[in-house]
Amino acid sequence: MSSGKVKATALWSKNKEDLVKQLGELKTELGQLRIQKIVSSGTKLTKIHDLRKSIARVLTIINAKQRAQLRLFYKNKKYLPLDLRAKQTRAIRRRLSKEDASRVLEKTKKRQTHFPQRKFAVKAV
Image (cartoon, rainbow, N blue to C red; front, side):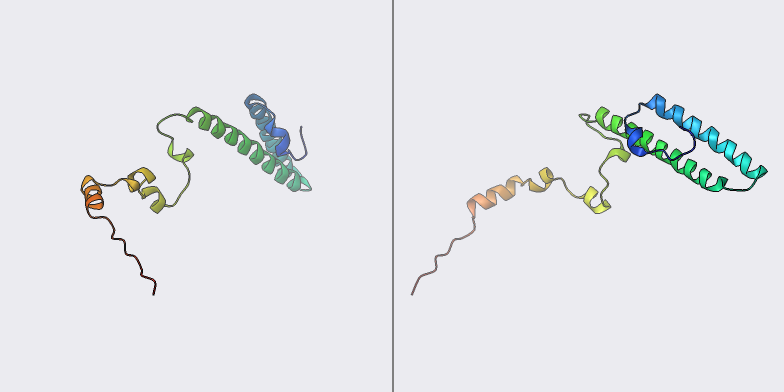
């Protein structure tokens, strides 16, 4: 797998052990390239760049898979960790829930039943 860009589509099918193993290989290769860069300056910079981006891709997919597993674990639980909750504005998060907003007090219910909105008929001339 050395030298060359890692495709994200190929990584999705791999399991965690393979991804961690590949990550280790990429990191060791990056370390070797950095040592070679010090000894002889040349075209190592583009390889280093590609390796760094490949490492980032592998880490991103590991994290995404981990978050997906956590979402499955917390699916039917009462509470969800803060980082897995839907990202919203503070105002939306503090807003009353639909259920609470639609609740009507007993006194208000009585007032509405005993003194309903008056209906007026418009007479045609």
